[in-house]
Length: 215
Image (spheres, rainbow, N blue to C red):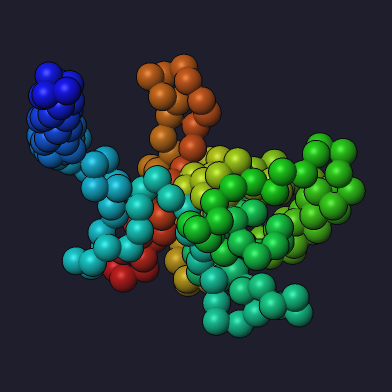
């Protein structure tokens, strides 16, 4: 009986020591080492790819956001601000048509390609984007019509940025050629030269636009 009690106590002691060591190693030392490496080698990414303007944080390079007026349309959705380049549509909101980027509900609409709801929303977006930018519906690129898988895509295609340039220039009282040049300066190439597509980060472009408007 005493031997059994002694063995049980020894096993419990070994288990508690293992728990303590693993807690310190895995719960304290490892996170501190990983965090230290991340801060030293990838400081910007480790802190959420924060973007600052005018000395304050205005968003993340990796997360899209909306640029809207205080006014709303008949369905209660915020109206896009004509002075800014607009992002892709976002399904990360109360409904598929809401263009507000909601971090807490990141995701796609999950509608099938043959969904009537999806097809109707694409048609409506084409009409709205064309009217907002004063172009023909056929000129509207696909990324202006469909939401991303995350609903938080920070980038748009160069084609969509170029389509908006004239409207943005007029709304800000800027020369169209200068705004067009700004767009071209913010076109990022394919990753490693061959992966993905060319893209324009909307937040960075709008920050540069505001700087141009101040001159």
